[in-house]
Length: 164
Image 1: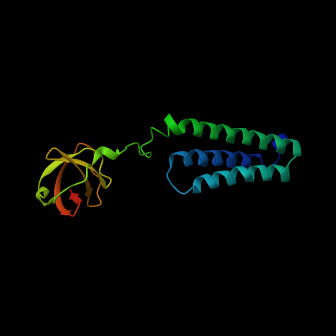
Image 2: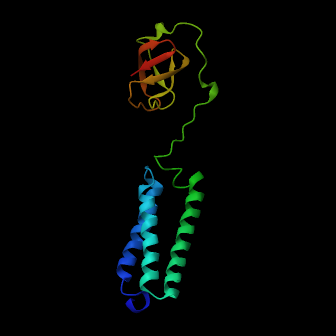
Image 3: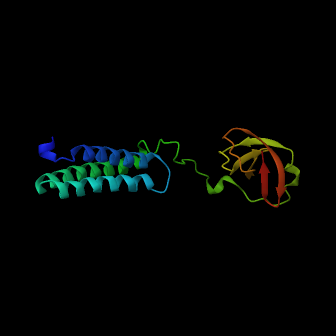
């Protein structure tokens, strides 16, 4: 291996695997792209090491292989973005609130204080709840409540309904 890929083939292999692992982690880990940037830098450093310390033909071959792997990863990412593994990830929000889900209130909502209802959507911290047979836009006190959980109205401030 050392005769073909040069004396630095072990660090290049480690950097290549680390770079690919960081790029894969970037797909599933929410963040600001730090792991993706580090992964790309690892792969670029492999190419630079190969060009500096090796024959140009081997360096071009290594760069081409890494390029093909990156292109394949981008294609897999694009295909899984809509209905693939990323879509099934718990990180991706799939819930939608329709425009007709909440009707505007015409009067005071003070009568709702103390009443219980059911969360029709996950409350993160806002969502839709069914209280006394009517759908209302509600908010929690900075907590998350799962869909179909029981909620109790704590306070009403104009049209803002706070539940727990």
